[in-house]
Length: 359
Ligand code: T4K
Image (tube, rainbow, N blue to C red):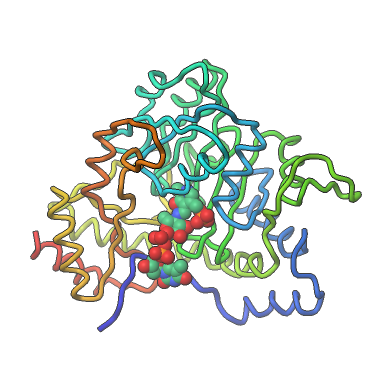
């Protein structure tokens, strides 16, 4: 029986990947601002249509570097409906989380609820474009401007997404990406910062390399967050195939839509934005129904995931004492269904059939 996970890493044409790896072997240069990392930064800036991309070793480090660059302190307002790294990175850096409720339809932070959570200790807002669905970026920018707050977008799911014809990564002081193996575009492990301010981007390049400047002096507090050349090789080889991968996912997503339209609710996608089809989230009538579907699919070796369960305010060790009923309700009823280049229309037909039968 074929095993189908929620996702499977795209692997590039092996010869293309090996050609990049040959360059690493020939140069003997493995990391520390290598040629391939520089090449990938330039190629991504062109492909995504943004400036100041700084590549790092993973998406969690990208968030941590962003907090340090913007000198955040006190409280950060963020969403309870996301992967745990969005919250845990804040706490790891000594920041206090204040959750704000999400919108029932987009699953993103509800701008109308943010201001009520701002206090004299708030230093920033950090929304997530969940599943690559852009937030209400204009409204959130207005709130940040009005209260003099920094704005970081955890854009880990938003590779290639445009909003009103421009990259959604241009919004906020900083946006971050994850290039983990399970992401639409990946470097096995990896991540990036997209930084609006040029001087801050220069500082980021030093901060990710222990604070060293190009002359060998130390300019600022730094850490080791560098991407290495093997990671960049994977990214360069995959970027050439990225458009084709998105097209395949688009077809699969549309087929799910056709098969499940009458059965399931899905997020309302931002009508001014493009889609990257990184995830296929579906909302079931109850938690009990969602769990029944998980069991039915698992007996056929199909593994959907509860992205994102639990709603993060329910985790005691974040100590927020908050209650987010909308987020909790969505988190309990959601499943992400398999979508990647290793599944085909017949697999999806089978998944839809199992869901219909089980419901
Ligand atoms: N912010 C947000 C909003 C994020 O979603 C993430 C990461 C981050 C920040 C942090 O970025 P990173 O520091 O991770 O770069 C996965 C990923 O590990 C994580 O990167 C991702 N979000 C999250 C949404 O999903 P898990 O715990 O579900 O991963 P795992 O290992 O269970 O993989 C899922 C499925 O993928 C497996 O069932 C099988 C398949 N798989 C996985 C791997 C690693 C493969 O077929 N091959 C593989 O190599 O978290």
